[in-house]
Amino acid sequence: GGSASASSIKQVKLERESELRIEVGNESPLKLRLLNGSAEIFGSELAPETWLTFPPRVKFAVFTWYGATMEMDGATETDYTADETPMVSYVNVHAVLEGRRNRAKASSPNDSEAYQGPRVIVVGPTDSGKSTLSRMLLSWAAKQGWKPTFVDLDIGQGSITVPGCIAATPIELPIDPVEGIPLEMPLVYFYGHTTPSNNVDLYKTLVNELAQMLETQFSRNAESRAASMVINTMGWIEGIGYELLLHAIDTFKANVVLVLGQEKLFSMLKAVAKSKPNVDVVKLQKSGGVVSRNAKFRQKARGYRIREYFYGLTNDLSPHSNIANFSDLLVYRIGGGPQAPRSALPIGADPVANPLRVTPVNIDRDLLHMVLSVSYAKEPDQILTSNVAGFIYITDIDIQRKKITYLAPSAGELPSKYLIMGTLTWLET
Ligand code: ATP
View 1 (cartoon, protein in one colour):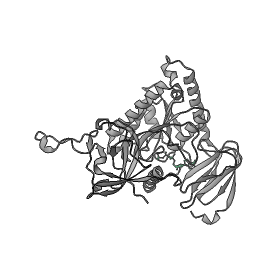
View 2 (cartoon, rainbow, N blue to C red):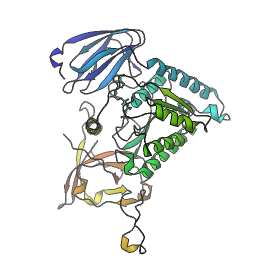
View 3 (spheres, rainbow, N blue to C red):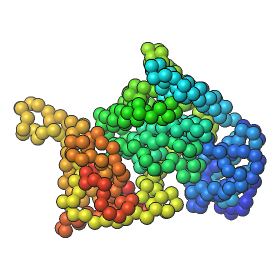
């Protein structure tokens, strides 16, 4: 950052209902603490006088309801104070959701409408602050003692795990401002690509699976059913993107649709909801603090996210390099290839690609630098609908000796020999 020379300690006084917006510099981390008053980062309250260390490039805001003094130590790309924020409207949404959670908790299963807590879905174009709003709503709910489920349908970035996945995880505590979503027990489905147009049918299939799984969990657990869920979506809202939004709203039976920063999307969804009396569509203002990220930045962020999976945010994990025989690993891919060779089809028929077909992949140099998922499937025919245990990264393919070298989070045998390949790659730097 340009202000590297000014990396001395600096104090910032925040008036009530204002926020300090920060972009940490590219090179070095930033330390920050609350000196007095009270403040939160995306819904998660700060402990007084405790230094937090933010890694390079992170963008965030420290918001205060009643006033606070902050202290910063380190270089920032930018830092400024803003007193115009949509936070009051966001916290009002939270209050309405709280009411519905309490109603759900107190209801009888016979009242199927009230018995279910609010199923919130956050939609809007890229860089409208969807992930951030989801995070606030989850942290505020967790602070109240609920354990809401976070569902992330955004395959482009991935706040729960690596990009290319859809996932869900219970949020038991306000989300840590530095560490983000805890990675303990997420339910993850591997789509394998970072754009849904690669295989729309697969994306829908996985959304259906995830929704069904959560439905089962909710039917067994009154506490998580009442706390319910917050669903974060992709910024793709045109054409197929819009179709996939409608599909997600239906599949998860969302009953609160929060539309961020787009009038057109709001009115379209509002019109759709006319035929669904139980669905509330609410328009919310985008925060002026949301930072736009271009394609190059997103691409880089995906790489960092994969790196974080293996090495941890601060290099605190030690992944293990393993060597296996080609014959030890069974790699599959979903969709893509033609169903049957042209020669096997009646004359004139086109070899139609079946987007949901699971086919074995020959191990060759094409696998180099791929990120594969490790499926929980026990048989190949379960691969399509199974969730995944984690990921490996292919670092070397030795064709002659038929050996494959890969990075895994730990040493030892993989939880399963069924691996799924998509188009997710990474160049370790
Ligand atoms: P996507 O297009 O990936 O779906 P999004 O709509 O989910 O994006 P966010 O990820 O919530 O957008 O926000 C984009 C960036 O802006 C993030 O780095 C986030 O931390 C940052 N940000 C959000 N709100 C603020 C704020 N009030 N002040 C400073 N930074 C913010």
